[in-house]
Length: 34
Image 1 (cartoon, helix red, strand yellow):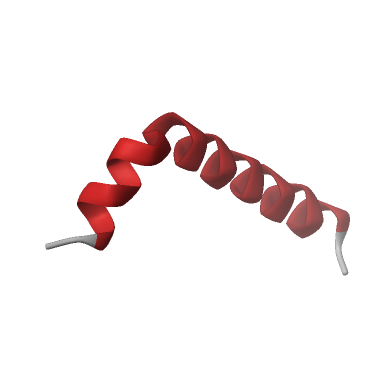
Image 2: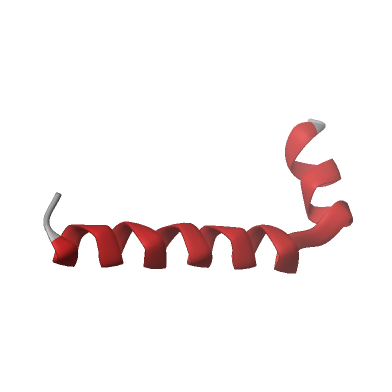
């Protein structure tokens, strides 16, 4: 795999994880329940 793509996917994963943490419990409850 190309280093540029690897760095990009790592950055995306980190961003998604941070977004999930930022949303926290309350956000997940609202998303999972209608």
